Amino acid sequence: MKHVQVLGAGECGLPLARRLLDGGMPVTLVADRSAEAILSGSVTSTQVKFPYTLDLEAAAGLGHWRSTAPEIKGIRFNLVVERNAIAGWSGHFGRPAQSVDQRTVFARWITDFLAAGGDLQITDLSLEDVDRRAAEYDLTVVTRASRDLAACFPDDPAWTVPAAPQRQLSVLYLDGVQPEQDDLGTYVALPELGELVSYPGLTGQPGRERRCEMLLFAAKPGRELDVFSPLSTSVERLRQTKELLERYLPAAFADRYRDAELTDSGATLVGGVTPVMRQPIGTLPSGRLVLGGADIVCRMDPSGAQGANNAVHCGIHYGNTILDNPDGPYDRDWMHATAAPWLADIAHPAARWTTALLDPPPAMQRLMLTAALEVALADSFADTFARPANMSTFLAGAES
Image (tube, rainbow, N blue to C red):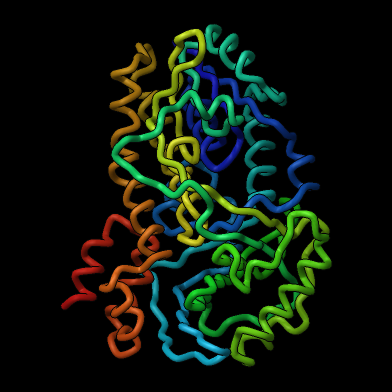
């Protein structure tokens, strides 16, 4: 039986490695941090996992928080101009979504992987290290990579993506926020400024998780919401957040955050995401081939809430495909055939949805103004987050 190496212990790498371990396939998982270091560090992103992703995790024995994480039953949308909500509606998912701090998730999954007898190696690898190690394994799957390693994966010529982040992002995990009514997440569009996304989740050490509110500012670069600096402290970011809420949001919304405090010293993150669309097969300097997954191949702005879902689907799909072909060979044709269904069914539709959400076409703009009068249309908008492949159906409904 072949031996697989998985680089990256995140939303893709951990489910992939665990799926292979449980299937009896020899697998080595390479991470840059231990579970303890992850828990003591800063938040890594925002994440909303939709029911199809939660189902995959549960089937793989990874859905530890299905009965404890708050349910996110849909989206409350508001279009806000000069602190006034000029349009608004609520759309419901077919089934609830959930969110759990990735620090909590990764720490638990790593601990479980080790308890199940998994081979975990904690190290930072240079490109030369990866190339040397790839010769020792029958297949290397790259789910996280340095700049040099990522450059081994050519751009996908079928896609044109921006060369810089479309939004400057600030993430805060908060205690003391008044819950939203009806267990809905909040999506606020601020024309010419950006967006604000907020929803409940779980944070904390595995076994001692607690509810919190996860807040994302997605600012158009250079505009009034773009005030957060990577050099600022978490306390400064909380202060700036409250000032922005008071200045740009209706009072009823801002009041929810009046008593907000950070969940912990690592509860903030500032930065931007440059979109990436790469081909899934990388060539190392030696000529050896490696298979790419998750953000290495398809990375998009987190405002569309697709990254974690893409990654989990990729990891489980790759794991199943490897187990279906335990003796290889894992050559270029096999890699292409393995990645193609994930790209066509999950990653590429999610990328198109995120692009449309950040720069809505006319049909979507009409939806945002009329969905308050059409419950089915509002629900269709909400459920497209869960199934981006249904975007064409949603847009057709917007035009009808």
